[in-house]
Amino acid sequence: MFVSRAYVPDGLRPPHFRQWPYTVPAVAEVVERGIEFTHPVTFLVGDNGSGKSTLVEAIAEGFTLDARGGRAARKAGAADTTRTPLGEVLRLETTAQGARMLAGPRLKKKGFFLRAETAFSMTENLGGVPGYWQENTAEMSHGEGFLAVFRSMFREPGFYVMDEPESALSFTACLHLVALMHELGERGAQVVCATHSPILASTPGADIIEVGEHGMRRAKWSQLQLVDHWRRYLDNPTAYLRHLTGS
Ligand SMILES: Nc1ncnc2c1ncn2[C@@H]1O[C@H](COP(=O)(O)OP(=O)(O)OP(=O)(O)O)[C@@H](O)[C@H]1O
Ligand SMILES: [Mg+2]
Image: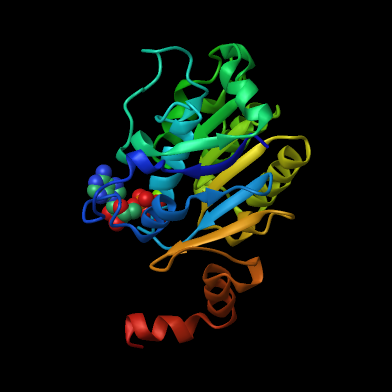
């Protein structure tokens, strides 16, 4: 584990919560109480617009992972050092290992931020670049390319932040990613991942935080709204579709 908590210090708290991102309940809760990381793998799940990306981007920034998505920031200027509004005020409490890594030389800094919006262009542009992956993802399908990238980038104990890594993946490929995340956690890495995938969220031993109108709450996989919806939908699609199609 590298990061044990994300919080906003007293002196950086906004005077009121009327402005984005503080209007997002999960963000307001982080400002008020912080968010604890207690397991090697943590998932953030919740509806569209619940604040998952806002949170994971700020967390990635806090660990100086390039906010465009990619490796640990190389040097000032080389990475996108612009901060998101939450990233400006969010601070990370690191473990001794995390503090050593952040203070240490750049090449010892292991981590990766997979951002939903930039993931695809990353698989296209960074193949063969030293420090990234050697596979030619141009010759692979979208999902194959993603898995190849995950396999080669998520190897060492480091701090991995991901935003909807499932977007290109089939059911089976999601299962491969579950195995990979689980293995990463077992080998000393830390993963913080926003997802809509009930498969990813089922990674054994993972902590799940459900975000929404209520703010944030820890939940068991079997009790997630996401899982409940999928279960009921797969059981009887017409019951859901009746409301939408009127037939
Ligand atoms: N730059 C911005 N300025 C103002 N509002 C924003 C900005 N970015 C996001 N928002 C709003 O903040 C809220 C949370 O957005 P966020 O992208 O964090 O949600 P999310 O949980 O990642 O959703 P999704 O599952 O669709 O990816 C949304 O209501 C969104 O419209
Ligand atoms: Mg998002």
